Structure formats: structure tokens, C-alpha cells
Image 1 (cartoon, rainbow, N blue to C red):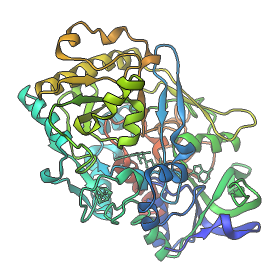
Image 2: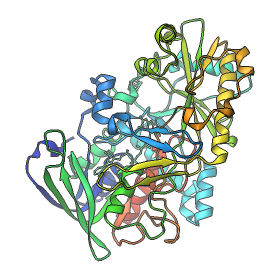
Image 3: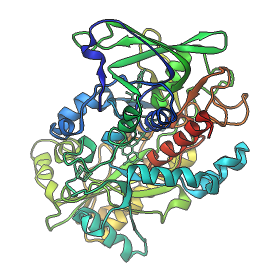
Image 4: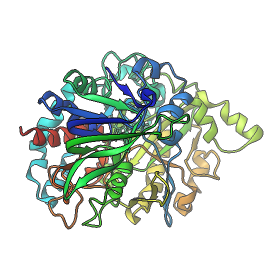
Length: 505
Ligand SMILES: Cc1cc2nc3c(=O)[nH]c(=O)nc-3n(C[C@H](O)[C@H](O)[C@H](O)COP(=O)(O)OP(=O)(O)OC[C@H]3O[C@@H](n4cnc5c(N)ncnc54)[C@H](O)[C@@H]3O)c2cc1C
Ligand code: SF4
């Protein structure tokens, strides 16, 4: 796939096209492919670098984090009140976050689509209407079941404990082909088996004539009246990747797909999307928590697919449990204690099993513009309902680990050591303040949410920003609510829906 490197271009860049797409991830790439294949002249501008699959797959994990994860994975949503501060991660490269996913694919749950279509009165968000887009994405990125044989022992032990308590698990689906379960997905697939958008939609867009420019950061949409005439920004071609040469693209139509943290920032800078007061608000994160169980026998949890099974047993309570594993180096840094006690735990990493929990959250977050700073500030106030769910889900996971025979369980709570079945009875997890909780998010959503009224939403049912004739949004920011499941499949399905409306079919 040919990509113009803004970093190496070395002079101002001016281009012209029908549609300029800002951001090349799960939301931007399907739009670019669809419109290019419909015969439009498409330009994709991506702030991050172009790191082809084999090069990414050969990087050390820490190298991948420094090169292609936004802010070296150090972005924080600051917790307000009793909410935890949450580490929010995203990719920043050609392909967006797609090349760093675990590949997990879930359709949006039917009850979520039902809620969207009925509460927003947008008929074609009904499950039966959305099915064609979900099916199309499944074909485009090859979504398949993860074979049971690929489950790690970490996952198998958790499932064994869960099933002994009547909790049923299912295999996950992922966008892979010929995956060998090496478990490196979040840091680039060395085998070309993960079919992220840089291997699917973007090459299709390029084959159909789209121009893709990396290291190309858009600051604002250029307007004449209520019509966009293009976008402007800079090529990140300075010695340390700072913007040196001007970038300007004239276009008939602008599609913003910079993700839920940056699309509202670009809109705000352009003076767009502010009418309803909803811009940047309604940020949902699917706050995630991981619990670890220490077993007497070796587990070697890093062997097998990182993510392979899940349970919806607690879905009615807004909790989904997903299998995960964390690279040993990162795990070691998060173990409690120091000195000899820390060394004891570090040495037990090969005996640890891990499982993750995700909360189907209400929108308590916000993306703020910070004067004189490009990066936005994120804040997050967990609703009372969601906050109350945290100790409950942690306890449920501990019970499952103990039922599987774990000798000790480690919670993501700063200040407490490993807990045994005996000490568990005396532990009240609800008493810990939110700031003691360790939580992460890979799923920022909802900050330019879709609706059927300009008074309450940022974009209309087709993704058009209400106060601009030809500016559209196609990324995780337009989802009206969180999903309770991993979002990439839904974002791509929504993106195809927006793209086909634009292409007139
Ligand atoms: C580590 C990790 C693991 C994940 N695993 C899964 C998983 O297994 N399954 C799943 O469903 N989801 C997963 N996700 C989430 C999923 O990747 C995202 O929800 C999805 O990719 C979001 O799509 P998007 O288009 O909104 O944003 P992105 O895919 O993040 O794309 C936005 C792009 O816009 C670019 N951009 C931002 N600002 C500008 C600007 N001013 N100018 C130009 N370009 C700009 C960014 O650099 C980025 O490349 C994971 C995410 C992470 C970070
Ligand atoms: S587990 Fe499969 S998809 Fe993930 S990095 Fe390994 S081969 Fe690639």
C-alpha cells in the first residue's frame, strides 16, 4: 500500500479531492474504501506514522508502545469524586487503533441497537436494518471464532472455576486469518494474521485511487459560510515530529474520523458542533479491571491467544468478563509491594491467571479543550450505578478464581496485597476510594453522539454535523451510548452505513 510520508515530504503540501477523511482507523478506513470504490477522489490524512505490518510485528513491545500508541499509552481520564482515574489507550498510526487491538469482534447487542433506534427515533439503527452492515464488515475483515484449542491455560482455569459455579462461557470472535495464537496482537501481528484496517479497508481504498498521507495532522476544518472547503494543519516533519510544513487540502466534503478524543477537539477548534452543548460530553470508556489468580501449578498465561473467551452471564448487571493477558514486563510493574515481597510475586508470574471485566457505563466523561495545548484534557465521573458495580464484579471474579483452585487473588486496588479465601471474607472492597482503583480503557466513545435533534446531539442520523452542510463524523465518537462489548465491529458497521449514505446507495 502506497502511503505519502508527511515526515519525509519536506515542503508544504496542498492537495484537492472530493472527500478528505481525517483519521485512518476503524471509523475512517471503511468510509475511505467505500467512497474511493464509488469513484470519488479521496484523501486520507493520518497524524501517526506509517508502520507496515512486518515492521510493526518485529518491534519490541515497549517499542510499539512508544512509536504507535498515543502518548506512549500514558493518556489519563482524570477521575472526579469517587471515580478512578482511568488510563485510556489508543493507536496513533496509519490504521488508527485497529493494528493494536486484540482483534476481538462483537456485534452491538440487540438491546443496545433497539434502545438507539427507539429513543432517538432513527429507524435504520434497528438490529434488522444494521445486520447488513455488520455482515458486510464480517466479510471484509474476516471475522471468525477463536478455536477452543487456542485458549490459554489462564483462560481455561477461569472458565473451569466459572463453570463449576454455573457461569457459562463462549468463544470470542476475532478478525484473523491463519492466526497461530502467539498472543502478541496488541503490539503488531508478526504473522500478518490480524486483518486490521491497514490490511483490509486502507489497501482497498488505495487500490481504488485514494491518496493516504501519514504524519499529517489536521488542526481545523476550513469554512466558507456553513460549507467546508477543506481542512488545514501541518506535516509532522520537524526533527522531533513537530509540525513544520503547512498542510492544506481543498475538498467538497470533510469526514472527521480522528476518534472520540480528537474529533471533538477539531470540531471545537473549527467553531462547529457546539449548538447542542453536547460536543465533547457523554464520553463513555467501558472502564476495565483485571483480577489475577495465583495457582500452585504453572500457568504460563502468555501462551495462547490473548483473548479467546468471554461470558455474558452478568450482562444484565452491565458487566462483561473477557479473557485477557498482560505482557510479563508490564505485569511485574503492577504487582504490589517492593523489595523481597515484590520479588516473590514477580517470580510467580508464570503461575498467574488473569481475567478482565468491563463495565457497560453511562456517559460520565468529558473531553475538554486546554488553552495553548493541542492535547485535550479528559475527565470522568462514574455514575453511582457504575461505581457500585466495581466491587461486585471484582468479588465475583475472585470467587471464580478460588473455585478454580487459586491460592491467592490480586485485585486492581492499590494498597492491598494478595488475598486468600480466608482473608477474602473479611475484605470489604466497597470501602476503597475510587482513587485506589487501577482501571484502564481502550474504548473511548460517544463525544459527538448521533441523534435526531440538533438540540440534543452533535451529528444527525447520517453522521452530518448539524451546523455544517458537508462535514461528517465517522468514528467511535458518534455512538449514542456505550455498548458493553468491544466496539470496533460496531464502529466499522456505522462507518459503512455513513459511507453508503454519502455515496448515495
Ligand atoms: C490496545 C487496544 C486494544 C483494543 N482491542 C480491541 C479489540 O480487541 N476489539 C475491539 O472491538 N476494539 C478494541 N480496541 C478499540 C478499537 O480499536 C477502537 O474502538 C476503534 O479502533 C476506534 O475507532 P476510531 O475510528 O474511533 O478511532 P481510531 O481507530 O483510534 O482512529 C483515529 C485515528 O485518527 C488519528 N487522528 C487523531 N487526531 C488527528 C488529527 N488531528 N489529524 C489527523 N489524524 C488524527 C489518530 O492518530 C488515529 O490513527 C482496542 C483499542 C486499543 C487501544
Ligand atoms: S495471536 Fe494471532 S493475530 Fe495475534 S499476533 Fe499472534 S498470530 Fe497475530
